[in-house]
Image (tube, rainbow, N blue to C red; front, side, top):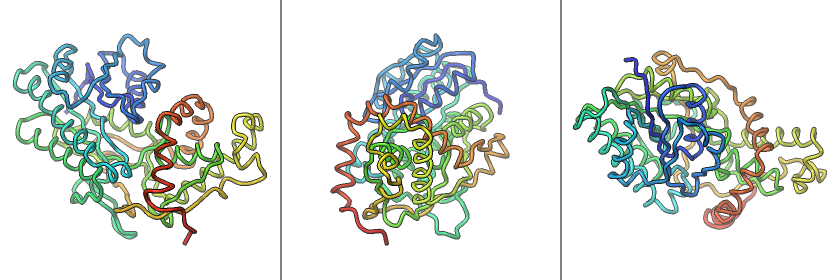
Length: 379
């Protein structure tokens, strides 16, 4: 089924993946509106969208996806035919410490959007064609053993954290609204994303920023947890394909073809940052505490900490369905993707330094110096 999105509502569009998708869509589409709805909680940053704020196709609205009447009004006012739903609480550590916010945003919020969309698109037949696209995660499938086959779209759900459980619940709601009411939905379950605008609490941006600042690089347990890393620009391209070529009611797994251990990611970033700074000594004025400017290597900052509760051991994605049905394939390998990400963080110092004083320092101290145990020696 070929679908041509016209007016888009992008929830969570000021967040990491959402803002990258806004950039991707505006750069590759010349019709319709892009309305971004974001509550601007800790991970939402209006600065992520600064370079599109003068685009006449773009409109930002600060609001809560749980406010169903407000969402409904937006859908009607702008004749929205496509919802791309990114808005979510997404950090596992935060879900362990405070799961209530995850249930409210990820479950109740998704249901509010579905109800508002159904009211306009199904009950009132307010637009001729529509699509509700839900962005989910491979974490809903649980954890894989070292020799298990990668996740497919038919892998049984087995979420192991409050975060992944809340995403699983929202996935099921989306499916139910298609099966029960005929809402035209698609779902993508993606592997771990990385790239520009990534909030510096996640592994890759945390590692880059801490190397630049000469701070400890916390690694959970032995660091041998495996993730399939997906560059955010590849993910955005896949979502665009799912909107245009995806069949209503279908689920598509989106992976990066880059299964890698966490410790290898950290060590690779250590090497890349050392090389970048070593080749550009002028960065010494900005990052005087970085190891390379003090006769050391970034790898010496690695400190193993007690593993977090319910930590999944391995994720891996089989994206053959998306390749076959949508024409998707990742364009970036992990080494080149990480190198470009390091370069972006070196060029966008003002962006991430502005976040440190707002929330990051408190979060880092709470989670890595206390809540989950003191740093320990590597096994």
